Image (cartoon, rainbow, N blue to C red; front, top):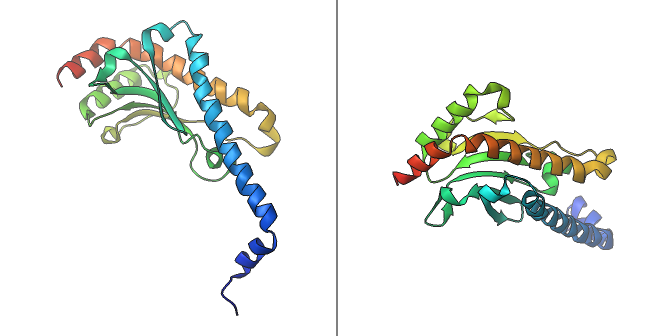
Length: 187
């Protein structure tokens, strides 16, 4: 037996195809990032964007929005966003891309209060309310995965889920603006 496993030998014998697949996967990641970042342009066309206007690109697979009023030392505290926007989240078996409301900086009391307020409005909940507020998450909602035969509708499906979630929760959180601002003033 040599130093290479059967799997490695298969890769070596098909090296050109392997290289093409790796290159294609990098391009797919880049296309998903470009798509995710393009959500900012969609948001600028909403009637509520004037009140929010802070779009943050945390990584190539995560973006969020917040209000300027909800920044502490330039850092967003209450965020609505999307994370794990990766090929494996849509086309594989790994964890799914997630829409969220998040409270940063170990402000567990604020996360708890927001979770309770949103839970009171059961008819208004999109996703699952996070009852373990120690994570910082208030709400999480997974984006639908995409089957190979649905690839032509992926862009519309993903865009509408993201925009609908952001639009819905900007309206909901606007109702708790004073509660959030009071909590941040205590910092």
